[in-house]
Amino acid sequence: MCSAMLSDAESQVGTGFEAMASGDWCGARDVFAAILDGAEVPEARLGLANACYWLGDLPGMMQSLERAYAAARRRPDPVLAAAAALSLVGYHKQFVGNLAAARGWLARATRIVETEAPDLRGELLGATAFVTDDPVESERLAREALTIGQAGGNADLELLAMTAVGGALVQQGRIAEGMALLDEAMAAALGGECGDQLTVAHASCMTMLVCSSHFDIERATQWLQAMERFIDRYGCPFLYAECRTHYGRVLFENGDWDTAERFLTEAISMSQGTTPASHALASGTLAELRLAQGRIEDAAHVLEGLEGRAEAVVAAATLHLVRNQPSEAATILRRRTDAVGSNRLDVAAVIELLGRAEIALGAGEAAAERARALVKLGAANDCHLITAHGRRLLGQALAAAGAPEARGHLEAALTAFVQAGIPYRAAQTRLSLAELLRQADPAVAAAEARAALAVFEDLGAGRGADAAAALLRTLGVKAARSGPRNIGRLTQREQEVLGLLGEGLSNPEIAERLFISRKTVEHHVARVLAKLGLRGRAEAAAFAARMSS
Image 1: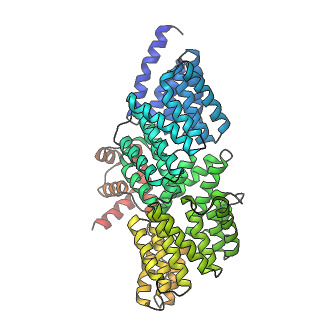
Image 2: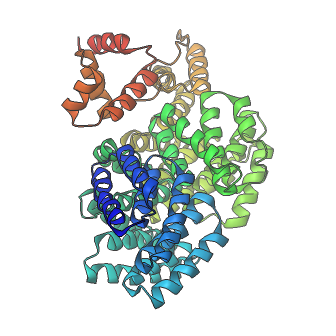
Image 3: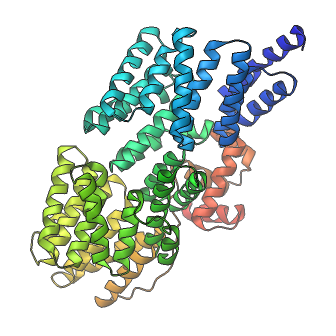
């Protein structure tokens, strides 16, 4: 190809990157694809890979990165080649779960950076920290990258390195220190300090992963609220299978079960046959959701083939408890705590569930001791929800023994769950409180059971709703199941869209009013209809009118 034609093609790359800056991923993809139809331009390949990421075309992203690397080596352009290789390091580990390929690309990137592209040393350190298993070494590497980013005024490198340091600190048990860095990185990234939207994506994914695995659902929820404007403009950044799973967990805890199911199902599909750990984690989380919905056989089907997987042990044990098999549940839970110890935050759910199994087996004292240890673990690490789960277990263990202080622990747990906005756990705790009080104070027991039933019905939590209704009937209260009134909960943005539907606005008019794309409006409208069980815009408008009257 003549130099004039190549120069013209390269000049079009800027148009593609302008589209990316505005969040027009389809437009950017089309521009880059048109360029590449006529010339192999490495910058266009990198741009196409970025657009594919945000459009969820992960195979297309990987292929584009590999071809960008090859084109950059032919040019030659060592900086661009090293950048493509470093991206492939992270994506092979995170998307594909292929550590051999990740390490191979890291070795290739190291050779290029050390001999031809020293300006990318900070990025190389960050990639090395990402694939390092030792959290202490990962912290050291990431801190060195952070220093380079700060000294060179490279905000993207600085924030990505800060995120890596935060994650490494949490892995070491330095929770407060690590979370403070993650909070800072998220604030700066969402505040516009970075030049690449992928920085926001990587920071938010790490934050969601850490929060979910350590029961800090309240912090994760607050960051999701802060990210709403970014998501409206650029789309959802949670595209790794593992990241989608942790996002699904937070949505599950928050009561947005419809969206949680979608993300968990997608994560299962993405990880099938590629990343066994991510697949087991996503499947186990979906099985927990199915059990909460009362879909016991569906949960069992999801868990098939995952026997012995640590990532699915909570779901498997819960299934045993639902089937009145506490001994089987306790066996697999003890096996997990024996393997990793009971002083880690990421096994808090295992400890609480083991306590429940022990209560069912008549070992209430052992359950109470586990509960006290869980409360201590949460307090030591400033994890309020772990403390709440511990106090709930303690209340249940003491209730089984007839101890009067059981109520105080259940009340404290309930307050924590309500304040954190965790409706399902709050409703479960209300039901435990109602069961405790049905003899001593039937009026309060009935009130708590009614409140629990309302939340269970709202969420579509079949098992909980059946139990609450049955308890109310024993108290002499008529409590026929009415079915879910509101599948999940509307976000603030979805409430705004519902209100505008009530005004009779079209999708383009809503997009203009809210300063978001038409595609984003279509997404919000679909979620509103699904959550409210409505069949179309007319029903949504009527529903909105009733709500405002």
